[in-house]
Length: 277
Ligand SMILES: C[S@@+](CC[C@H](N)C(=O)[O-])C[C@H]1O[C@@H](n2cnc3c(N)ncnc32)[C@H](O)[C@@H]1O
Image (cartoon, rainbow, N blue to C red; front, side, top):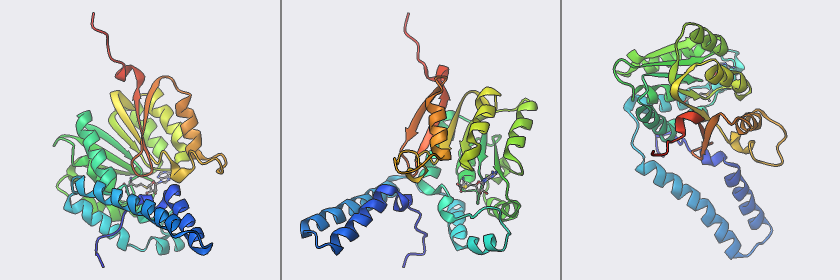
């Protein structure tokens, strides 16, 4: 057995889950061997695409690998049952290698000097982005769980990039409002926390100026594991955020179908090109 944790999100993609259900149905109802073979092939193609994506994508640093491994080893269920952590945290919440490398590229393309990471958990996204910052760059990572301050803090301190990282534990909206009041802003903001607060955060980011001029926002879980587009799912925070974005003509938006989807947001004026005179 491999000692590397499996960190593949498409295992919880509703399309994959439906294919797995179709396979069981086909096997239990005596479907033709060709039908069963075809469903198995569809599932294998998903697996092969994952493996191909992983093998071409650049590798993560040793400290990022350690964060992944330690997070999988930790007994989060017990900590939650004992009331030591506020929400039911799980290792699948980590961005992981593919998304981590994407975030790292985005920090570099943006030439960001100040980055905000909303939703720290065990620091995988925070460190991936900090690794691309210049030596005088700064990344602030936010969470509300006091337990994570010590656990994540000690993991992050193993990286030579730790000097660029500041951990803030407390109310996220208070932190954001206070930062705006202090006249500070961020070049890149990654949102990966409770989506029900995103409308409030987006207001502070775009209307109150937490995002620097020409800055970029990346928002994780655009698909909400299918909640964004499945007709059978009732109203939910993911869809509310999608509706809010669709109705806003001041923003340029792209849904990048990477893992559970990442929305890239920029001010529309920043992406509008000019016509030669
Ligand atoms: C999906 S995880 C973040 C994963 C992280 N970006 C990574 O790459 O590992 C979401 C985090 O947001 C935090 N969180 C959830 N709701 C929150 C809230 N209302 N205020 C602050 N933090 C919250 C949780 O404690 C959790 O650590």
